[in-house]
Length: 282
Ligand code: PAF
Image (cartoon, rainbow, N blue to C red; front, side):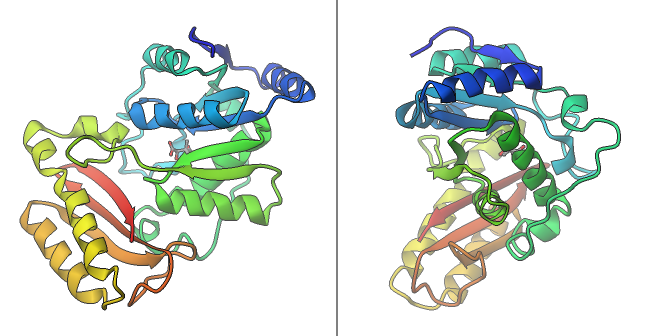
């Protein structure tokens, strides 16, 4: 396993040549797309990538097109040197760190919209977000050309949107989800957790606790409405401003009234100025 700083690429032709050489040698290439500000959750993706592939490429690109005008693009944490060091320790061969002009040169016109899956949950609260994600991920997949790409299940709607886009566009890559990594108290790891004040950080694990309680309450097939209303009220009482709390079919993301197949409890809520999302399987 390479434990030094990964080879950094900013030129697309050089990246493509390198990956093509690996694949020609029969080496399985796994991509871990990120926006940097790496934490243990990202490193779990790299660890899984190492387990299933011979070569690991991580991309670091804070994608402007997936942030709304009032979101945190300009204050999103950026520390490339620290990220490269962490990727090296985790065993990453290559880091693809394109400039904004490389990804979106003057005259760029195309966007990818995945209907249906983007209409609920985060969709109405983050107009354009999933189109930005689907477009940049499609570009990253075309640029790197991996056999497999890994995404965290914490962004469950994102994972489903990407799987759908890849299937619809016949992209020759397998998309896999990797389970959410949590702090000891249940808080899902996120680059945005660093925005939380100490008081907010103390309350934040309630989000996962509420999801776990709801999942347990509906597991036997009892109606979901009661536990969801109670869970939402408990979160609001604890200081969260809940955007949505829902139980959805794990494949279509359509809300369900009873759980009779694979389902997910999903939530988005503000704690102060910080927007947190999380989900658990039922
Ligand atoms: O989950 C993320 O970090 C981003 O949405 C992704 C998938 C890297 C696309 O910019």
